[in-house]
Length: 330
Image (cartoon, rainbow, N blue to C red; front, side):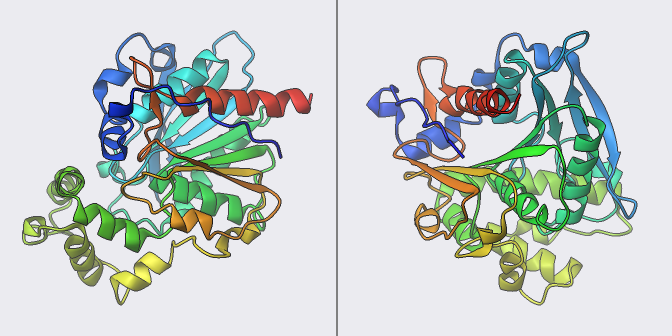
């Protein structure tokens, strides 16, 4: 499997700071301007098994043959409208790909669709949703791209394909994927601005869920907690079957040799200066012949931004990689 390198970073030195790249990755400034992808987008509610429903958005090329379909998965407390999702989707759509952006449970405008709350271990419903999207696009090559926690989901889907193949899923890419969620949670808690960013979004999400289902949830005391780990511990103790946060985190940890069973050509992209994901986890991975790891010196978390318009270098990189797959297999 040939993996193209990202083009060299030409961003001024002052913008190469990993924390700055991380915050700029979510800046709304980057998503400004016309987006044919959004103009073509249509909301889709997918039945994902056991009564679960997930909300997505599908952008087709009406009247034009598409190169393929790219499914995008956002990170924790992101959504189909996160800046990196909009920018990446726009770039891929302009290159001729259909784009399907999928919300994880309780993300975006989807809190009302399910009574149960979101946990990162809920792989079955995400796998089922993506399998349905791929089946509906049976005539197209399908590519899956996940960011951060979405990257973790994407890697677990690539593993599950060993026993439950998705026939037209050709490649999986994980950008800034969280491999050890317990460590990543601790690192996020150590950085005041990052902690504040996620606490604000998580508290808002939990408040929406409580308002929709007051018979099931009372988060009032939990919302006053001051760290991500404290909220995780409280939610798991009150509303889950997990005996501890460590057991919960371990259920979706992907370090060591866990990825040896990956069954779809897969690429992991990370940076040495990611403030949330330790690059050590990537260097210590044991992988099979279907897996490639790309480590960049600069990029922060989901960033890899370059030039005055702060476009991410992986936008073109992804399109080139998927074009290369199609060209090699007519």
